[in-house]
Amino acid sequence: MDLNTLQSFNFFPVPTDIHFGFGILATLPERIRSLGGTRPLLITDPGVRAAGVLDQVTHVLESAGAEFAICDRVKPDSGSALIDQIVSEAKGAGADLIVGIGGGSSLDTAKAVAVLATNPGSALDYVGLQRVRNRPLPMIAIPTTSGTGSEVTLWSVFTDETRSVKVAIGSTFIYPAVAVCDPDLTLELPPPVTAATGMDALAHAVECYTNNACQPISAALALRAMELIGRNLRSAVLNGHSRQARYAMMLASTMAGIAMNPTRLGLAHALAMPLGSWDLRVPHGVILAVTLPHVMEFNYRAEPDRFVDVARALGESVDCLPRLEAASRAVSAVRQLAQDVGIPKGLGEFGVRPEHVRPVVDEAMKSGNVPVNPRRACADDLSRILQQAL
Ligand SMILES: [Fe+2]
Image 1 (cartoon, rainbow, N blue to C red):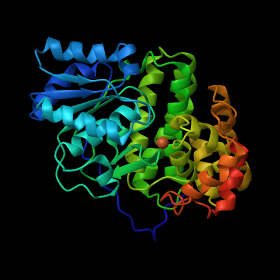
Image 2 (image 1 turned 60 degrees about the vertical axis):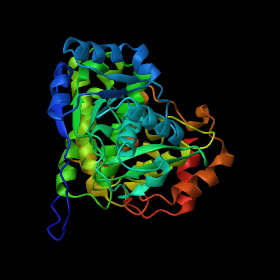
Image 3 (image 1 turned 90 degrees about the horizontal axis):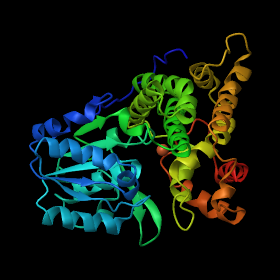
Image 4 (image 1 turned 90 degrees about the vertical axis):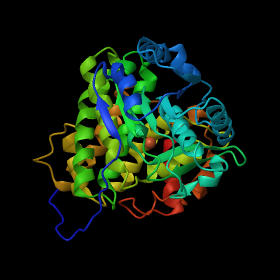
């Protein structure tokens, strides 16, 4: 797409110090020392422990003679009450640094704990944008999936258990101080998790690139992320031990995370918050993987040039096609990718029923991701999209 020379924009670079590569976990003790940490608290979930990844981290710390404490009780879409409990534990243990290890739930919990350790009150007091007043404890993010990009974002998403809805703290204070991105930690991820989290990363890149708030620096990062995902997600799912594919997917996830900070996303992510709430609790990656092609089908005619770029980034040969047909290839490419990596056909398999459509859409319409969507969307449009995704 040609540059829009009339556009003014803001891009804020991520303050997170990113250390990336196979084996980079070995440098964790050095990273902790450089942040002045002497008593880190490791925050993770039972799945990361069971997969042996927590042992890899503790082995590195023990070999360096480092002291640390562990909390491994994070649940999927972890709640505000647990965050408050872990904050008390962190204070009791005299923790001076937080290390989050895991997928989005563990990293987002760790980010919120770092905030609450230096700010009074409960996690729910800081829901919204820029409400955090004091600098958090230094926090190191160690992603073990390639999808959320949480290691480089200004958001912490968790469940408000008083209303059973997903909420978020957004603050420029919340970026992890350091991200230790070691693709080694993803080599044993099971195919369904690799597929769903990889499609979440793709949704970040596509929604960021095609929305009305996108600007050239985010666009460059998002396009490259799409290319990497288009070329590597199938291998990462079908041959999890492919180091090339795991490296590429972790890189894509981190790049898409940086891209989306200043741009917000689109309708698929607007739907994701309520679909991950109440008694529904559909995993975030699955929601994105299932809804993304339907949202793209709705959007592509509004900004065909951007969707032509998406199609091209995903490896489609579109140069000889009429513009709209070329743009529609972005939709079919994503649909095919989802199918190839075994994404479930619809959200019905996860208990979402036609009677859920209206309440989900009512909540989704409040999202800041709706106004930036490339095509103007009303509640009826969102209902139709969700109906198609059931
Ligand atoms: Fe996401």
